[in-house]
Image (cartoon, rainbow over all chains, first blue to last red):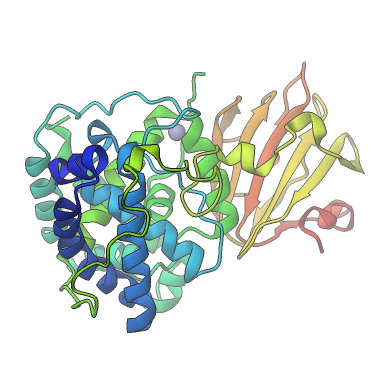
Length: 177
Length: 213
Ligand SMILES: [Zn+2]
């Protein structure tokens, strides 16, 4: 994927772009629909996400994160802007900035495939009650308070489930760092 | 900058997921921009987002073939740089919140060595700057929800520790605290609350304007 993106950045390669579009477009559309967009709006936002990828391809730095996490971050920010009509404060960690200091993350040298596999495995190994709070955060965009309300749980319980889930994911990535 | 107080793991995940209430998200982003450790955590948590996104069952696009990008003839690297704000901000959160810097802030005096400046925030929660004179106390208060306090200048301490520039106090609704500004410099903080702080006793009426009530 990083290779496809490099072709877009260096040569405005439309074949490479089409492949990225076909891989991620339908997933970003599904993501937007999970977050409450109707099919038409979700498709527009997926389209815009991928065209943001096209326009910003030269800013992407592979050593700072995977293509998938960069696309996730772009989709997330568009979702906050368009669906929530709030200000996305998150800066894109996978891009090169003048302002923020740009040191590479410690795990930069390791295989991207391996890291992705670890995250997937860690997620699927979570007990259902921990998996649930993670999914409600990422795919429904619910705050801790909203999750507590939805599940009828004390706020403290929601937060500690999230912390434990994250510790497990972090542990899974740890020996790769 | 040596930062010792970071964002809570649960806050970090909600921030990376795009689920943190907007005011809290602004303060979290301002800390992340200053903090290598938390930037690494957000990057890891965005991998989680990527994993969840790519695991979603694909929903077919009506436009299976992308139309030719309208600006395709220009190599992307030569195209107009994106604006510093907007959905993909390149300017730091503090630069966006305080375009004129701290020096341009018009403080509103609350008395007792405390000043406040409210910042507009779209969406939920309240956001503002707080300036506390050396040695002065912010009266004891609890929170109806989460509160994030990022130190921008000077330092303060309370029962949970000492906070210096770049440190963030990530306190939830269970904490009641009474921060004291350290001697030497005014302590300036960026403060976000999910819901307005609840103060006890005499100070209540005085400090309610912090949160626009
Ligand atoms: Zn930090």
